[in-house]
Amino acid sequence: MATEKKLDCVILGLLSHEELTGYEIKKRIDTALKYFWGASYGSIYPTLGDLVTRGLATKRIDTKSKRKKFIYNITDDGRTYLAEWLRLPAEKDELRYETLLKLFFGNEAGELQAISHIEAFQEKIEKELPYLLGSQQNLEKHIDSDKTHKYYLLTVKFGIQTYNAYLKWCKEAKKMLGKDYE
Amino acid sequence: MATEKKLDCVILGLLSHEELTGYEIKKRIDTALKYFWGASYGSIYPTLGDLVTRGLATKRIDTKSKRKKFIYNITDDGRTYLAEWLRLPAEKDELRYETLLKLFFGNEAGELQAISHIEAFQEKIEKELPYLLGSQQNLEKHIDSDKTHKYYLLTVKFGIQTYNAYLKWCKEAKKMLGKDYE
DNA sequence: TTTATCATATATCTGGCTGATATATTTGTC
DNA sequence: GACAAATATATCAGCCAGATATATGATAAA
Image 1 (tube, chains in turn green, orange, red, blue):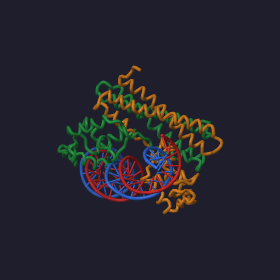
Image 2 (cartoon, chains in turn orange, yellow, red, brown; image 1 turned 90 degrees about the vertical axis):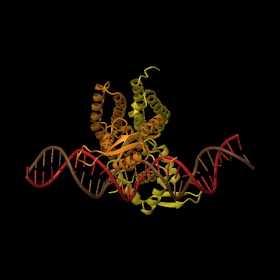
Image 3 (cartoon, chains in turn orange, brown, cyan, yellow; image 1 turned 60 degrees about the horizontal axis):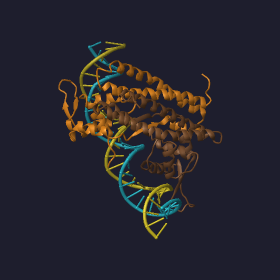
Image 4 (cartoon, protein in one colour; image 1 turned 45 degrees about the vertical axis):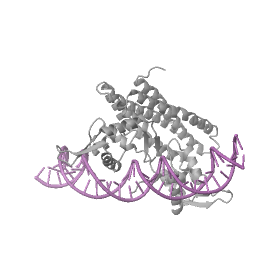
């Protein structure tokens, strides 16, 4: 069997509760899924075409908007395909952290460089964490209005839990590299 | 500029403290880097050829072994290239967790299925954590014998910290999905 | 008002990388 | 002696990111 294509399912998943354009799909992925999945236009548009060809989605031109715009909907076959995938166990759970790679080879570059990589990483996490906390608050407030909120909250809490672990590690790591002060 | 090729640097990093064959490089990646990076033979062998062409590594046939075997070494230019990359800030720090994807769309599939995805994830983490703890012990014991150990330990501690956060989240998540018992 | 900038919107291409597959030899085990 | 597992290299299809191209509507500043 060929490599399973995950983006098919991501798009169908997003289409399963609202019709969307390719552009909107990209935005959803870049906001809601940002912390655990990604996708580029270079894969979204061809995949959308593919889904239509296979009868898992439909494409229609938006007439209300002045702008050239194609709206995609999920079909019944699409829902079946999505449900099948959701039932299957997850295959790919992986991390790809260049920061850790540079740290692993850190002896070649010295302590100061290692510390600066850790600090850049820490800054990025500290900057992103507030958004996750905001999402959490928001979702908890409206948890009863929509059943999907509970599942979104689950993934947000994953992000918060891991980000806090990252920050804890940053402190520990800097200490190990001799940066005890501050 | 084209997409920067990270595997170049991973291989050079590994070659920077010992000569290796392609097969051994794959093993190093699958053990030491496993928790934050990956690579397949399908990219390792072509990349090795590339590194030789560009003068960043050398290739020689192993005469001692009975088996057909090519040993690779880093060159001075290779060390310069590696040092340059290590100096640059990390670009790609990302997570790709299919488990979270399936959870995000969990409303389509129901609570029981969501719980079973979480439990499968938890099992995998619980199975892997002891190896990380073992590595930590080992590295801490011999921390003074080799300068590189400190940097390896840093990445192992990252794994331990995040894995513990994952387990904490698993419990929280199952509770949220109504699995209070046990 | 006009000009610049940003957000919206679709599409394609290069090249990197995974996972699968193929092939062959050596070592260890029953 | 037979079989399985580990060693070892190599290639290919297909998925995907990042870059690039193109064009229009909305908004704000000059």
